[in-house]
Length: 192
Image 1 (cartoon, helix red, strand yellow):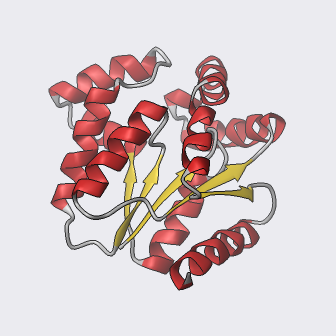
Image 2 (spheres, one colour; image 1 turned 90 degrees about the horizontal axis):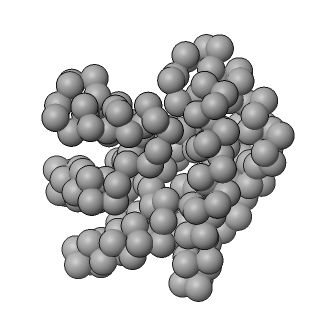
């Protein structure tokens, strides 16, 4: 089973690259953002809580996120593997994910970190905001999300680096070129 974590700040291209990786490797995509949006759209109790947390520009608490992830994984036991997009965001989440996956004999295979400058992120998200109108892309919320990534989430990378699973990929360039670089890392991992 191939289990990938894709990392990068908001606007790094995680969603775009995830779609291509899913098609290439037959993975089940687990995006915490997509899960949250689905709950919000369906107006579940959880969705109402998550909506307020996200609207305030804050991260959803670990307990909610982890239980949603476990449910998603358990519902897709027949998958060839999973790609985790937007999770884990903290070392505590990474440890919880490792513990859950290893208890099922499905550890994280490799971690892909898209490296993109803050200047490039701001440009990309401004374009995305014009197209999608996503509430979490508004300038004030975006600044908070980018700060959150660089102050908290980035600390998860050394956790995976110690495990020998971290691969940093230049996230600036043509989409297909970046995808090729990601695929090369995955293919080497699968062969090795």
